Amino acid sequence: MLIEYIEEALNRAHYEIIEDEEPFYGEVKELPGVWALGTTLEECRKNLKDTIEGWILLSIRKDLPIPKLGNKNIDIEVESNIHS
Image (cartoon, rainbow, N blue to C red):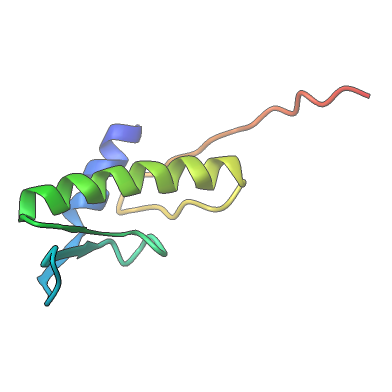
């Protein structure tokens, strides 16, 4: 489920060339704040993949919604282990 979601996010990524030391910029508009840079398109794509993974983990940890991408969804049920 996780790998398929990340691949779907990468398929939806938008890339452009910007004036910077790392001229390749990529973002996934459906995932707020998910963007990356790279000196090559391949490096940008790898950095974007790492960013997506971190974004998913942080979203799960903070119990934030993770949007559905096409038919790909991450549905996590968290059990509370808090004892009185």
